Length: 303
Image (cartoon, rainbow, N blue to C red; front, side, top):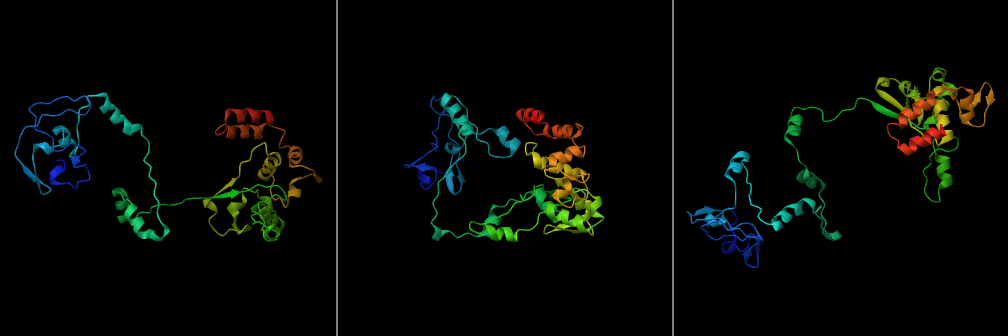
């Protein structure tokens, strides 16, 4: 039943200029009449009255419905027949009209923000989540921690500073994880046998300082940052870190058979890391999963 609307309830939200927007109550009709501009005017015969929401209502207030759909879904389903192009346009307008927008202005002195009340009012707890919580089951869990190993060139570590305090930031900057690994290899003979990617399984990094790990080494996943081959020196430095254990400095990595080379690429070459296509095949294999076709062609030229 619609309403009550009209004279019986002039304060109804659908009332406009003293008339219901949905044109209720409808008129009694002996037959259904098609209307070109709006929905059909359905057959409505006089019937007994009943009280709905405290008002006496009859067949004129009945919203068009389908008995089969009401029984099937046990819910209110409004059914109208589309008899004109305007009705079809009305339906598709709601599909393609986009999202709703609203402009609001709230004076600062009138804002009373209650974070707890907003959380309780806006949060929706579904039946599965409620049952899961009643059973005391864990809502989340973590199996392994990922340790990211950065790669940077000498004197190119990241430093955060404020304008006008550059020198203070330089004096207070801590050593990086990579520099701490160099320092560890200078004093720990056992660490000198390990690669940079093996250190997190045996040591823990506390404020960028490596210390011997007491437990939890089996729940760590070490990942060295992936570098673009166009960033040549960092790319070749990363290659050395993946193959040279126990490096004590950047100079150590550039030293091969007591000869100090000027670039990391030359050190890779004299360590015979560039003599085969294994590294390039690995690079293309990784890039194939995420790079675009233009990038793959560029990699092929550079390699």
